[in-house]
Amino acid sequence: MTGQRTRRANGESSISETPNKQGYYEAKVWMGIRPDGKPDRRHVQRKTLAGARHAVRELERRRDAGLAGKAGRARTVREMLTRHLDVVLPQRGRAPRTIISYQSLCEHQIFPRWGSQRIDRLLPEHLEDGYADMLRGTPDGRPLTASTVRKVHALLSSAYEIEVKRGHVARNPCRLVEAPRLEQAARTALTLPQARAVITAVDGRRNAARWLVGLACGLRQGEALGLRWDYANLDTGELRVWHQLQRLPWRHGCASLGACAGCWHKRPCPDPCPKIRPSGRRHVCILATADGLCKPGCTGHARMCPQRTGGGLVFREIKERRRKSVRLAPELAAALRAHRAVQDAERAVAGSAWEDHGLIFCQPNGRPLDYRTDLDEWSAILGEAGIPHAGTHTMRHSAATIALEQGVALAVVQEMLGHSDIRVTRGYVHVSSPLAEAAAATMGRALFTTTVPATVPGADDE
Image (cartoon, rainbow, N blue to C red):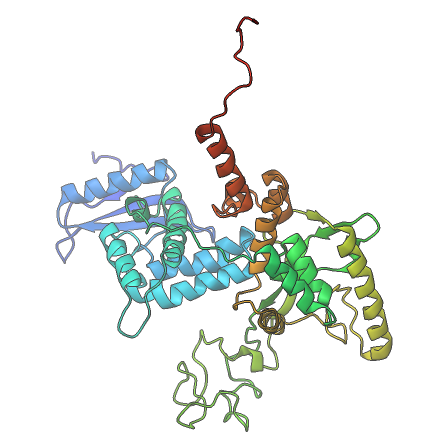
């Protein structure tokens, strides 16, 4: 009587007791259900039977621990970061401009160095060598700052943390590497006489109140350009800074990147070509193929695409992602009332050409102000006031520094700037400020000034 054949239970692994034609022992391990609903069975083959059994036990252990991971080889660093930027960060609410800056770091720094490396094979030594190369610079590129290298480190580490939690890799190599030390940034701020010189220089200019608000309230450029009348109460002196104006890059909307009739890569550049090389040759995209079309990934000319999408000036929440309000000085509220009267007159002149976005500071036709135009005017104002060139963010630093010098409490300045951490606000207290000078004078009087009392306490009167 022959023995009755038994059937393996569902989910039970199978291991061949004899090698196949290639000399490998094969095994199959049930790992669960794939996203499409089909069974997830992993195929294992090893040179020895003991090796096959060990691999099966390891897969079963990971399956039981909920760390099955994805079938097949581990992803590359490029694949990991591409999904991280396209799927994970947008769902976390990360700002589009931040994601765009991360994409630039990936294309120019991360992918050329580690993009093709498997994520389970990237070593801490690889990262250290890459960071040193970034800081040192290459013959055809300038050295990167420590802050940029730290951004690269943070981006890699955040993506690896997800892979570790999901069991795709055993460890995060970034945790074994110390990012470059970040020196304290030198903040450029105007002195009180310089700030008054700027106020004198903007007198009579169109949108003069824009610079008064920037200096008095410490708003970022996008916050100032995104102010709207619906969020300003000039009677109570409250200015709600809830949104900022940002410019996002355009993306191709045609079916094939650069293949639409209006793109530069479908037909020769327009005449005159906006991109003329010093040699006189017309512009050619470095990603263009032999037929003149863009390769996938070229976004440099998406603004020329008739079906372009996702770009231009847009309103977004402010950086702090919370509703911030600032108080207006009576003089500033009066300046905004006068500014509104001038804007009403411009609206009447523009007539049907007026585009009503409700903006406090706008073009003569109501459209938003461009970042570059705003920066150019600020440079002209500084030149007229006899002040060295500085970015528009200088107004934010100046507002904080002047407020602290005038004795405004640190917590109040923190609320005005919208800092979530008061340690950031403390960075605006300079050792040369009047507060520091007053503190030094007080300590000097206490320690080094001696006075002789008129009478000796406790002495008997004669």
